[in-house]
Image 1 (cartoon, rainbow, N blue to C red):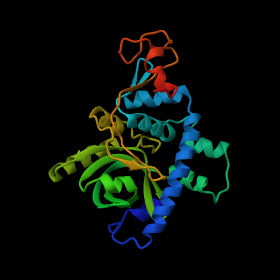
Image 2: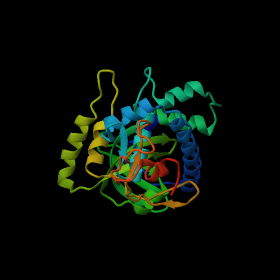
Image 3: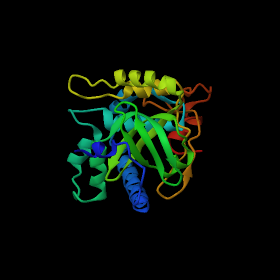
Image 4: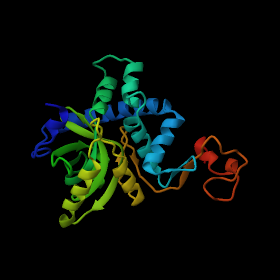
Length: 275
């Protein structure tokens, strides 16, 4: 029985006697996971980013165009998990290149990433200060998610697309959740059926979530759900217009965002961390 099987039961979240312990582990593993993500993102090549951007529909004339802050996180998540080179994704390659203590939190996070799933979920119950229980609309299993900010902002009936990482006793969201909205109950069956078609694996048994993610982005489902960093700082997911240049955009060329300014006086500042 895998970790996913443990979570897919009808009583998930009904009684959480070790709530404080789970929150403590969630904060610790979230911090380790963020650090790992940064390390692995730095290893992504331009070819990987462009392949991911093309599949998600955000690559336009060799320029990655983001309509919200979270879309960059969605792209990086997809490139880490779903773009493969030599049959391996970035996580599997990192495990080969950077062996660590098998008992370390880093390896625990990497192993959970290997078992991660991407699906469409519906919030069934909300626990402020802790997280939510959700139903996987594809498998119909119920899953307990530890996410303090999500527990403070989500509402029952909310449907969202996300990647889940499984740990002992709870799951965590990965990347950026894309809320579809609170759908009427009589429409959920149609959503589930459409999801099942999109989630059909290829001949190698691999499921590519790109069609689901692309559909969400096309509908403007950039996340507005607050999340909470391990430090406890609340981060609002506000909409923004942002572009990352391709290497073929010169400093003195017109900015790809269409502002009419030169690239060096516009979006290049965002790329180097300027105001």
